[in-house]
Length: 350
Image (cartoon, rainbow, N blue to C red; front, side, top):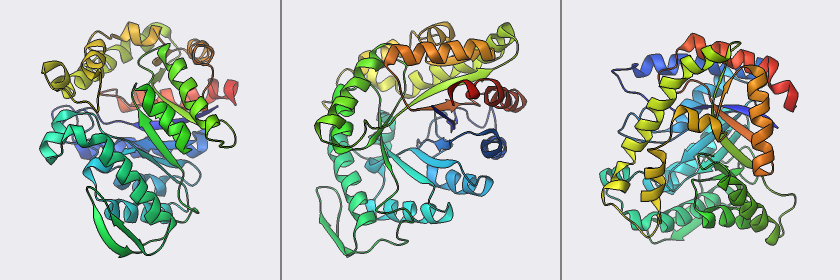
């Protein structure tokens, strides 16, 4: 099992200015290679403290590429709904070159109504924009002289530059929240899947659908599953809970606030049941997240037991992407946690 670092900025200038957030995050990135973390990952979001410091994951990962030599660099994820495929393909090729072929590209549909509204994109176009966008980017990376006449983006014969360092293109991931169709479709298309296990045991069913889709399409192996967890490791169990509780609960409140349109009357056929998903998240607490295995918090022994139990619950997955400096967690606390986890937890799952 592999463990990587995920950076999800969930704060605004009143909590921490952006220059300080990224300075601290890149200092944590510098620990990835010596401590054995397998990847660095960051999101794409806009306008709101929930993720808004990261409108372009390519920029952060370019900086991370200079702080690492081995760790994979993963977009978690870019959003075709808000990006022209010609620009996105060029940026992917550029980062793949800068990193020496260490890029992996996660794509997502986006799910925050306020982002769609501000970009002037209809929620009901989400699926179509995603499917068209990821296919156009794939073709631009794999082929030369690509011409597309799409529903949303059209362009004449074009050869995207730089050409990708990894052939035929960097590995693709698809981000999914909780829609069974999304998991099954990613498997059928041969993409890896990245998800957030806030739904607890339901993740076993969703991963099963992904594995079945992968197998039914005849792909070799059984695919790759990456799940994201909040992680805070400390020598003292009570201290771990005391330090991590408030930042984790503020993160949850920020998520619900950013997605609040779903519970206030917004609906879309492309997002069935999202009002219930967000309403459910509004009830989550520090205790409930730890209990269902969505947050790994405690001593090294506690976390080893949590990981083993969650693996058993969902039937196994390949990669854990760890939010290591969530919300306002202090840098020194995050640094000690990252070091302790690497020394006393990771060896048990090597």
